[in-house]
Image 1 (cartoon, rainbow, N blue to C red):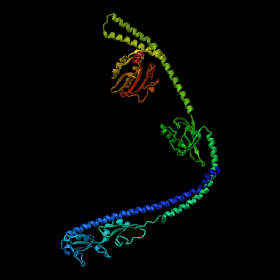
Image 2: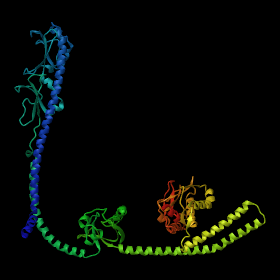
Image 3: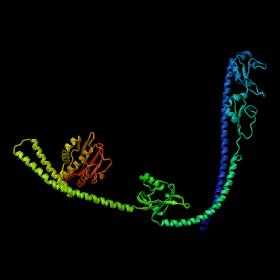
Image 4: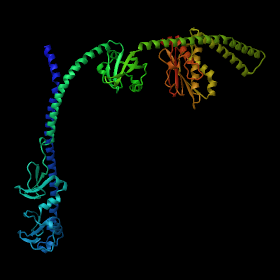
Length: 635
């Protein structure tokens, strides 16, 4: 069974040379069949055209006869009862008819006796055109109409002249037109009186205008069948050439079979060597088409050889968002400008996984020494790139931690150093206030200013202490506090700066807000920093506006929104804006939002950034309710 199944394909391959001859014979038969069908279609189309032309001409002749009948009827109605030849000749319609087509006119009485006949056999005063004579055979047709006196007017006309006036020139070139009677006798014709054999003809009746008369059209050209024309000679020559080509193909196939055996052996050796490599190999022709890939390359990109071979750029392993860049690099390589030491590229596997590769290109030369394409070696460098990326991130983290540690130490030292000046300011202010009071000084403005100086110095001391405690990783000093009071204190500190810049501030605090459990000093600093950032963004704006809103956010948190109508965030998110040392201001340190985020997260809240309903930026943070408020709401 195996021998038979192997022998059949081998026999088919050896007899493949005869297939072109078989196909040529099949094509010749099919072509002959098509020609036969085409002849039949042409004959059918010619038949339809012939019928349409005959009906069109019949309608034209009928219209002419109807028109002449109408003229004859009008002439008959105009004749008196006792008409003679002189009276008949005086009729203008008769003269016009004789000049058109009429041969003669005869007036009969009620008993069919001739009253007048024009023209007479003898010469008459009325001169008729020479082409109005009756033809030699004496065949003519007539039109009749009753007269007013009960008689009849009979007008004779030449059927041949009728055809000459009604048959168009283009129809006369295509057909022989004849008028025949019921016995086939030709009454008039424009061409041959007898229809040649082998040509199509069609006959249509002219009744009732002309009784027992038919219009017959016959084609002037006879179509030859295809076997009597040039196609038969061409088909015979085609079969002879196909036979010669099949014989030459048989000899060529024997030579190719021997060469193919040698080539298969060499290809097996080469494939075994390529499959043993871990480096991906791809071959491209001069147009960039993939002509060869090895197993390592297919494993690298995740596609089978059938999916890759024959593909033209763009390749399926190119990233979808970098097709233009990959195409530009491909053109550079095809022009021979690929770097000698290779170049890096990012590809995408069939499952969508990105891979980093190093590509080395070399010219692909054939046996005649001509360059036919390019051979590339591809190495996966993803592991190396990941190691380099991990090392880079580790270095960045260490640098960030180092800068944060240094900043914390500097802030702690500044806070320690500022405590004494602030305490001295508070002490001096209190002493001056007490001295003035003992001296009986009664200027309320000065005394209020000194009291405010002491309060602000004490407030500054508390702020410095809280920030120092926060930077030294101490827990915030949380307490139950009212959020509207914190907002009012923050606005009181910034009110003069905001008024100087012409910024309008609107507060939209929901009524009945519960107390929050937070460090009021740190929350106040967060709010001040957000307000200052909004004011800086609104510098130069024609109608600056800031809105502070607060409302519940779920069952355990309050949400505070700071909106402005400035230029917005430019698509940046809070992860980028709150990153340490990231700043959008030329003189900024990039630590304000980072500290704000740390303060909010230390209170178990979250800092968010987005687009404001006013058209600018929105910064939001959440704070938890106080424990007492939460317990009261639960009960």
